[in-house]
Length: 103
Ligand SMILES: [Zn+2]
Ligand SMILES: [Zn+2]
Image (tube, rainbow, N blue to C red; front, top):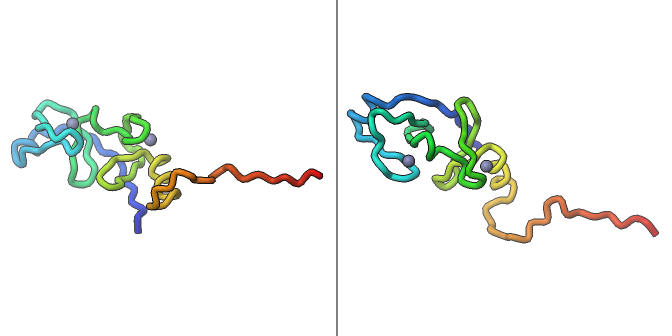
């Protein structure tokens, strides 16, 4: 199943960093003990780095999001990708249906 939804958690990382030397999953920089971070499963992100890869909108605590090929996506864009399927066809005809029924 591809349907993975996670809720965004926010935490201060203090001990986490000291223990594991955590790095931001997005920018790969070290997370400093005073940084606010977002957590998605085992991955941690800087607060600013945790945004939808498609619309760049920052995701807030409690919001649903999905991870697709290691990219964070807001729910809307995640659904879009799932809808569009894995084939990278740009000629998606969604919403382009027309009915010419007038004679
Ligand atoms: Zn970062
Ligand atoms: Zn988005």
